Image (cartoon, rainbow, N blue to C red):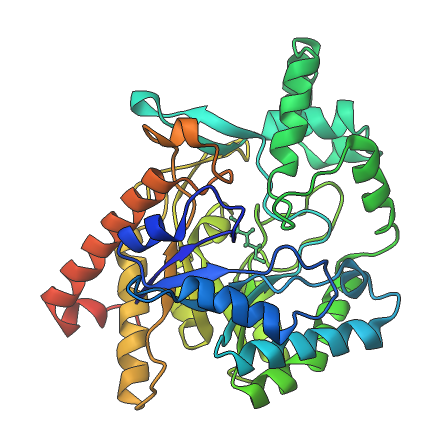
Length: 401
Ligand code: DNO
């Protein structure tokens, strides 16, 4: 397991010097400043690489998160020849600089979505939270999306009406800002009107269309990735369900299987995100990891606590609904299998995903979900689990076939 840390580049409030002090070795990052659909030039990749691999820091850029997929590819429209060509060129440039694991997602319009960025946790820290009532209030009363009511249970619709009637302008602004915080451009935001417009661009695009567009993307890029020795890994939807009337197609094992089957190549893999998959009431994350173990190229380890109405809150890394120890066991068993095959790249990179804001994090205003102390706590706990399982020996990692 390669301990890794997501760093958002020079604009990240957390410095590489601090990342080095966490003990992580891998840096997970992207050239966030390059507009979607443009080529990542070799020089820019090289510059970022040398900023990360400063002598003495012990860090290296091991995973790209993300090489974004342009909305036109998801919508299956526009100058796709150019966009696919650019994507392949970026992969070639990354491979030329030695960066060979590439995470991406296929969520239309929005990336991860939360309704509260600072839900209180014990002792005064804060956590990211998805609240079904607030999401319904946003959709029904702020966005006023036609048909949204049908997506929520009746009692949530009633509670959403109550919430909005008590919400002043500041509360509504804060809800909008929270929902927008996960946009993958990291620093972009939509207003309600812009979001409406972005959603309109998906009019008439259903689940099967999106699946077909993803299959086409895979057919266009996976053979090139395979040739370059690049391992692509799709990130699951977060939350793992349709949202804002948009279809989502990477939410559970039944979604993942046809994606991995579409191109039977080591270059077509999965980012095992325990938090995203874990927010689906029917997902058994440990079983999903075991099912697709040989295609997991990267892992995001975090936990969520689900609630009956579809709400969930980010829990401590070893708390929440997923048995993190069992999950790490699966990953260690897979590493042992790869080692047995004589693979040089048998180690699976993982990062402590998200973290509560704790102590000094509260003043720091790091990227939502990505504070220093909260993630360091998660990393330290996961490091302990890994060390414990390793020292218990192979029998402890062979139980999840
Ligand atoms: C959230 C992240 C996601 C992820 C993208 C990958 O914290 O896990 O934003 O980076 O979905 O493309």
